[in-house]
Picture 1 (spheres, rainbow, N blue to C red):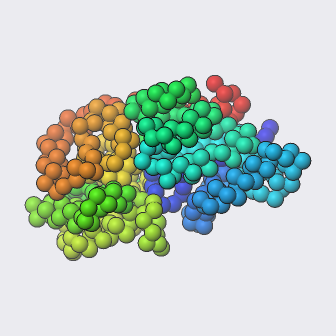
Picture 2 (tube, one colour):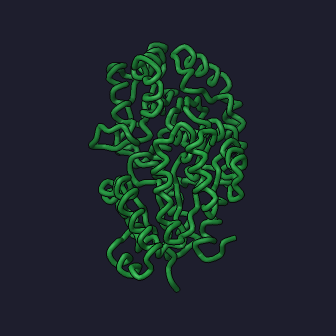
Picture 3 (cartoon, rainbow, N blue to C red):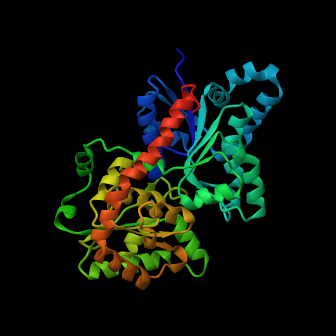
Amino acid sequence: MTRPVVSIIGSALTGNMGAVAMLESTLSSLRRDLPGARFVLFSVYPAEDRRANRHPDLEIVPAAPRQLGVTINLLALVYRCLPVLRPTLRRRSRAIEALTASAVLLDQGGITFSDGREKYLLYNIASVLPALLVRTPVVKCAQAIGPFEGRLNRLAARAVLPRMRRIYTRGRLTHDFAVGLGLTNAERSADLAFTLEPSGDEAERVGASLDLGVFEREQVVGVAPSAVIARKIDAAGAPRYVGDTAELIGTLLRAGRTVAIVPHSARRGTEKAHNNDLPLCREIAAAVGAHPRLLLVDQDLGSEELRYVIGRCSVFVASRFHAMVSALAMGVPTLVIGWSHKYREVLEMFDLESWAMSHTEYAVPTVLARLAELEDESAVVRARLAEHLPQVVALARRQLTAIADLAAGDPR
């Protein structure tokens, strides 16, 4: 019996720990449902992901933006138009060989085809077009899409999204946008990172590099900054995100609180800000200054380990999307400062959308006031998280079951 091949794009083994959580959850689930399956990750950072790869059944294929957008898409077009060259293309191009052998391509991009992000439209299209050209089914795993008011984005979405085998929408708002566009292949779901299963030894692994005693002694306020939010706030006027965040943390420290700065997206060995909050977090910590109750989580932690650290916090302030997901999954009351509908629609699943703020509201007094309210209502918030989390996890897992059925030849 031929072992099914599943290709994946949009997630990673390094950098954005949300992308790592989605990938790890997918591999774990599909291994159970598809014994003997092989996996291919089309990676933006192939060298980093190869070094981090501990999965014998996972192959890393280079797919940096230019390589994906030009080389792989061009070869896929030739494959489609010139059948006589198909055997040669499969022999000469590992990307084409992997795509043509795959039962499905999973697109795990976090947000695609969204107004205001037109500069990413070419990449959104390039990620799925080669599979469409070689006639491999594409499933968009739970993600945000829309809104579609912008003419260019609407045209691109109407051209591409109906050709997906399935689109799993990550919340009510995204689903409403999909239905409004006329899509009939969309299904409500939840973010795959909610299905990440702890291995049970996270405390031991984290404790080897990070002093966990602070979480035993103190009620820790976790803060997950975001380079994306920083750019958006600073672009609206004079650069202030680092200074404001340092002032926020400093105020908490002067009030006797303990604060942990948690970069949920980190690429070590580079100062580039794409999928990398570590340089920003270090800059914020330096602006605050050394303090005995300030902890910068600067260790090289994986997605499970970071989730464990976040779960030890008493409350959390999240600007990076999957830091929010980790906090919710661990039952931690969370104040969210976001830039898109994708934050609010996830909080809606827990009846907690009132704890979402726009980046346009970011100001130290406002955040401090809302954080104080959150701590006052923490018991109610924790109860809602405990009530809704099993339903959210089940909703996320349902898409993995359907993907396994498709890969096994049963497209129910």
